[in-house]
Amino acid sequence: MSLKFEVALQACTQDLARELDIVLPHSDGAEKRLHEAMHYSVQAGGKRLRAFLVLQSAHLFGVSKASALRVAAAIEIIHTYSLIHDDLPCMDDDELRRGLPTVHIKYDEATAVLAGDALLTLAFEVLGDESYHSDPAIRARLVVAVARAAGPQGMVAGQMIDLDSETVNEPDVQHITRLQQLKTGALIAVACEAGAILGRASEQQFLALHAYAHDLGLAFQIVDDILDAEGDAEAMGKAVKKDADRGKATFVSILGIERARTQARMLADQAAKHLEPFAEKADLLKDLANFVIERRN
Amino acid sequence: MSLKFEVALQACTQDLARELDIVLPHSDGAEKRLHEAMHYSVQAGGKRLRAFLVLQSAHLFGVSKASALRVAAAIEIIHTYSLIHDDLPCMDDDELRRGLPTVHIKYDEATAVLAGDALLTLAFEVLGDESYHSDPAIRARLVVAVARAAGPQGMVAGQMIDLDSETVNEPDVQHITRLQQLKTGALIAVACEAGAILGRASEQQFLALHAYAHDLGLAFQIVDDILDAEGDAEAMGKAVKKDADRGKATFVSILGIERARTQARMLADQAAKHLEPFAEKADLLKDLANFVIERRN
Image (cartoon, rainbow over all chains, first blue to last red; front, side, top):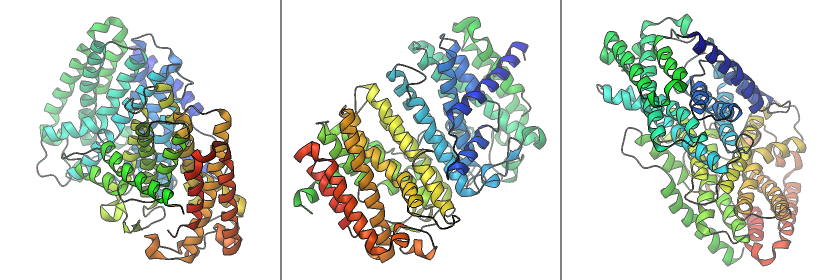
């Protein structure tokens, strides 16, 4: 991992924390508890992979950092809402996330449902608002792209299929791949496309970024399954080996750990290749593909 | 209630059902269950008050019916998502809504959470999409207005305060009024403003519609409390007297039923008066104010 990449990822995390604090509501009224739960979950950290993708894809087209950061915040907010709801007792029932109690443990279930709802809604207020970009056509296009990626034919469909998967007989690689493309791939893809939308990219540039995002997202998920199977709960900051305990099919349970590792490596290399047309402007995105498969959490 | 009003409300309900069917996803894939739950909840009916407000406020400015109907569908979709989540066991724990089993009873809790999430996201995809209006500035403005009304400083805040209200010592009329303005008033207000946004209304016209919506929303909620207290479960299609059973403060518990009735009548009259500048073009909106306080469910 290059030093330049490490520095850029660190800067992204810090810039994003400041941006999120600007974007999230602050209140001393009766709704204080809701707003606190929103801050708690959003500021709990994480790799900020999606934010980094927005910033770096925007960088390819010379988009201003202020515009890109606002869109990055909106997409991280949507990612956070999805984690809060996925962690609920009626869903994956997780008590730990990023080393901290999940929202329904720290607060309660009702607050967790509402904090998720509020974050999802806020993300679209942010994307529609004129403060980050003067062209309403760009803003409306971002609203639609993000909503499609996150909605009933994107991320939410993926979570529904994932919950139902425990009842599917012998799920195969095709099943897991489609599930993960919806559940995590769609939002990762739109994070890459966001920079292209902000930068009024050509159709060909869109396709290159989309192909990169596709392979990156899949590599990311395969590594997630490997890390869960290897099971270092402390490094992961959440419960591990849950998939195996539930008898849930994953890339690892189907491919075996060695083939899964080879597959992830191949996808990461392929992801980086899609970015060749952007030359050295895309170096950090290429580094990211490597980071995704070498991470320990 | 005028015959013209009854006919218009009926037509709105029918047009909306068709529009919702166009807007909601259909699928035979593994996500079928999710999409079915979305259709089930959205098509369960209801008074379609918010849709009617969009159509009639749009009518004041000569907006095309196709544009207004699409926005009406988005706002009814948001209203439906809020009902699904409010009915969850960790929230109001209701098993019956509009005479039918609530989504978590008909399906399960996880599906109910996800169907709500999917509907909320879909509403913003609809509002951002160019198919209903060619001007992206109008679309982006609608996205922001609806998100503000529904989000952490609007509807979701109202539900949070409502849940916490059971622990508030001696809530007064001010507390209940603010709570209801957030919980139900904000979305009713934005339904009225949607027509004004579509119709590029003047600042003064906005203010008139906003004042109408404010009084109408409050009258609506007071009547809701009266109907709940009077408790005709069959006419209401849901459990009644729940507020009293929970010892929850309402307009009725604070004002008494007679003063509540007088207050609702006064607000409805006042609401209609705000519309005088629009002359007979606003007749159906004035009728609606009357309908809201005379309804039996």
